[in-house]
Image (cartoon, rainbow, N blue to C red):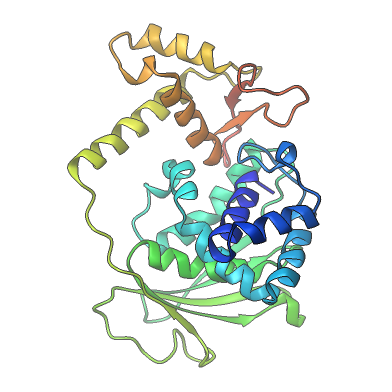
Length: 302
């Protein structure tokens, strides 16, 4: 499982329950400052599942409640927004984000060995263009986390979302089936997202996001441009270090301010890695930022 999940999970615990509980949690799972999770690395799934069980005992909240809340938090927190910007800024609604999710997970598995993405499927609804079905299949059975992420997707894009889980692997079904409807806040809501959906369907609503300022749009465009140029200079095998990438960019674009700043080049590499386009040597023995190598991931469908 990607390190970003572990880092944001601990951020969620600290912000939701306080830093003293996080310290207790880390002690219970045997985590020290030297082996705290890093967003650039990959960890075993069991580490998160065991951590959630410990957090449930410490907070006296059931596992599904914690995962539901964390799913919302994962989509909305600033670290995910920053590191996954290359993907998130390409979609403009909750429905589009869910439709992108399957390919994004598969692409990320190409960039990080050890990631086993869940299987997603999609279904259309009859006579309701705002509705969809999402099918989830994973041995981890983290459907509560996915439920929260769906709600977070609606909040992120200023939409109301009705969502209900109609079938669930934890109840013995073959897959989890979510009935979902994203609507603009001004659109009247029906009592359930789809015919036959449970009346306990949840609704989340967040404020409509303000339009990005022109300077913010300009910054996003500059970041996207730099990420595209970084990807263009990377090899398909062997890899380049950060300093080598920077040298190639300077040679191509001697007047580009972005290419002269190591922080911005590293940010672009991180954006590409979290989008699944770039592989790193972060999990190899002896890895350090100075000798870490980057190369292109195999593109899904190519």
